[in-house]
Image 1 (spheres, rainbow, N blue to C red):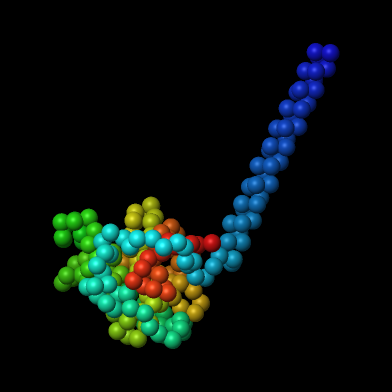
Image 2 (cartoon, rainbow, N blue to C red):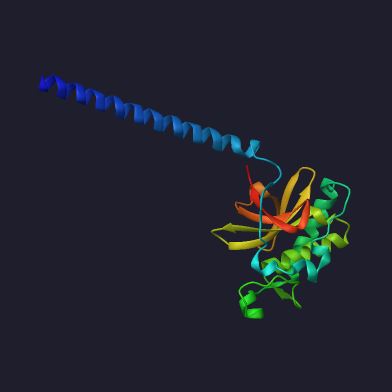
Length: 205
């Protein structure tokens, strides 16, 4: 009886191990299938999550620069012309402004403002790009300041350009404008497109 019981327990253990291995294989196949499908099925636009406080350095931004938080325009900007213009602005500002930390320039960890002379950090550069594109006629609510994170940059600020075919990223560490899915960033929060004076968490699902 003990030998039979031992054999039964061993067989039961083998079945459980096989079932576990099968489950792992199925999960891996499912993940591979999801990864393969993701580029074609991911949303074109970054989603709006729950309200959240603005980044610490952005407090008072709307009072200093009303254009940074204004709203107005008649729908998403049309693709090619606006994207080409944004590409020119992105490259021009990146060449013009030399990166420097807020700690070195202002003696504080974070201070969002337009670059002084030819120096500024990532959020200052994003802010300047927003102003230049507004001056060129791009609706302000289609230009959203945002914060992201990656291993390469750490916490980082960028500008989102919202077009009819999706959200694009203007970045001071990248000369080419990319669709948000191509950046490799983890998106954290951004200005609310419905009310740019407030901020929201970003949803990518």
